[in-house]
Image (cartoon, rainbow, N blue to C red; front, side, top):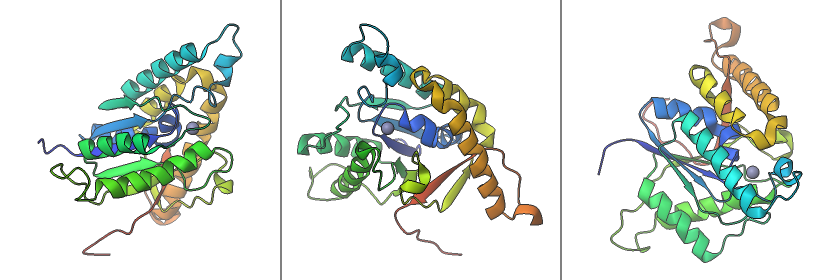
Length: 244
Ligand SMILES: [Zn+2]
């Protein structure tokens, strides 16, 4: 097995990984991580309004378009592997079978860290149900009695990326990541999301605002480093450290 570091993003719909952690993906890819993006669905019913407004649209065509956009975004970000499970959306349902598919990916990737949605999202229950399922799948992947003989999962941090309608989600960031060096890659990935053009500028502004929080927490005007674009994350698990 290669010693390359790995990371795993679990995205309910095909575009979520772009808005919410595209910078983290591009940055870690540049640092040599093999980043796998697992898209549980294409967001074909719930996050493809612009496509559905076209005449004669079909579910399959929407899925095909969304897959194409996700592939284009993934390539702009330097994603190592884009895995699309096509589990369906609105609602995205987590049968035992579906959970096992996610566990298999987690065990195969053996991520150093994972990224997924906020714990609460009353606007989009697919998102919060994904996080619940990810926690469960992470637990199963750690169990020595699950498919004995496979490599069990260690204890990767699960970072929750920023939701839409941030203040309504009970999401509280404790980590800000400077994505300035890879901003152009994130913006290119954002622009691959042709079906959601209304979000392009919104998520550019989010990145600029989070950069301000990065600066404030890195020392602000008393010597903090500059940052123009950032992403915020909430970590689920404690850190184990040798020094504070
Ligand atoms: Zn979504």
